[in-house]
Length: 459
Image 1 (tube, rainbow, N blue to C red):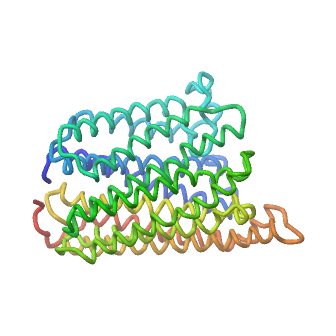
Image 2: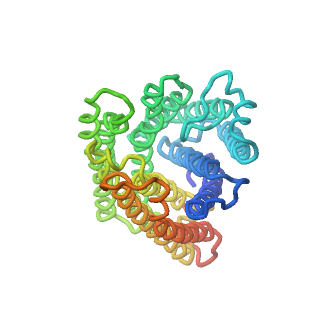
Image 3: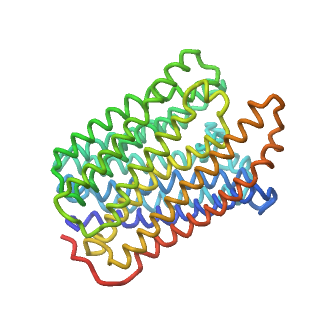
């Protein structure tokens, strides 16, 4: 490990994986509640399980991004982190605040939680993905500002690279667009209009910059390809991302009361959004094919290649399937949306965090890569999780197509719950593939504890 302060990333990575496991467990609970409606009721109702599932997703990815930044920035800047102590303080603040929020969701009714956490002072709660209490949102802002101050000061005192610049742009964008979670207008159209400024511009805007920079960093390390070549690809990808992603926000404005021109703007630019993801896939495979060395960490290389492919399929192809307004008219809010969301989040963001952890954790433990036995186990985990996610997506897509036909297109449309019973087979299949995914995640965790023939020491 070139810089001692990179070691703070280890704590963020461990927290991320623990929260990821929690997210998957609550996903399995929800999946079972789709077909067994009173499972764990009233202890954990479906709306609470869903809230915990999605909030854990956001929080563990943020831990992963922060850990990735704390590892990447010192190495790119060729200097120690500005304040490792601040990084550790913010880690505990974020972890405790996140844990207490989840406990709050599970322990008391949501309305009671709102009452006791100051929602009457500034009403920010009750919106999907942004359900966090006011004090948690304020805590997130404080943590984000401290984190950004820490890494920005590190970059300012050291070397400036394209990778660190793009990462900073993405992270500052993440913080700025989160501020719209505090804006909750009474007009529901205006509320949804600006709600997407956090939700969409995170996952289809600034998060993609974070994805691109983390992936570029790992590819430089495992391939030895010239930095200039990788940076040129990175600039092309982020330009395409921002042009298509920002204007593509309009594909969320089709049916919420906004002007009709958003049907054109949203359809055209969101239809172009697969292009940067396709470019990312070509980028990853091209760099690996041009590699100048065989890095001992084969598992990290596999994660890097998988990130490009799965991000293109999930965010690109499955996003395109229902992004055009005439198609979205029928598919909006169906299981097709859920299929896209699952594969896109896994492919674009979960996989790049797992890739970063796969590359960095062995180095922080004093070796270039895990043992061969550990890497075989980790590659098994890659294939189990990835194939399971493909099948989860396919089963949800099949359920969604049947749902659209029976509920919205048929000459004799059926009631919502009748349709849910008819697609229950796909929900059961989704649940069992979810169990396979969990097994893959367990293998990923175990791979870091497998002993075997040690790889070369880290430089």
